[in-house]
Length: 273
Image (cartoon, rainbow, N blue to C red; front, top):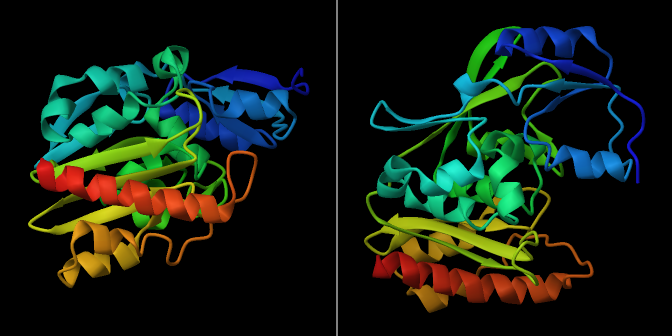
């Protein structure tokens, strides 16, 4: 389908983007476009104005910061997958970026666009939740930092206000093991279920993709591991506290079963690393 009519503005700075968002009715940011444009073509989203920030090259980077890593919100998946610093210090972000969509999507889609979109079936939000990442947001009131655990509010709803721009993602360096396990019917599809795990010494932080209205932490699994359970026993609790959808890719019960299988695999991979 063809999107509804909209106005188009190109922002030359983050500050101009904030101003444009405030001066237009129902304005939305456009970065790589691989989250928003499909919704517009189906007319599930009908913004009156698109504010294009895709040319702000200063928001595309990976660098060290305060003992961790800072990732610019407009860094594309392709670049994240191949960045040597990210591979060495926080490999789960690099690895998961290589599983997103197909080559076309990875060459145009951005980590910030995925995070800001708030789709619970997206891979990177789940990884950031497992990492206890921090998200840097700039708006008319200045800059603030939001924990990943507080950023995802509900289905396609985040902590971003109508004039906010996500500028940076901050992740720790991972010293222990990590894993991202994803099941999809086709290689380029959204995850039917995904599992991100980061940990060491028998404990792990575990987050789930497409098991609720937001990416969620598998708290029951984490509690089981902290109590001394092995990977298989902890994985049996993967479905607790979840609310997975039922759709053409699988029922809620099927997804709970998948979560158990994938959590077990992920925990064993964490231990192996």
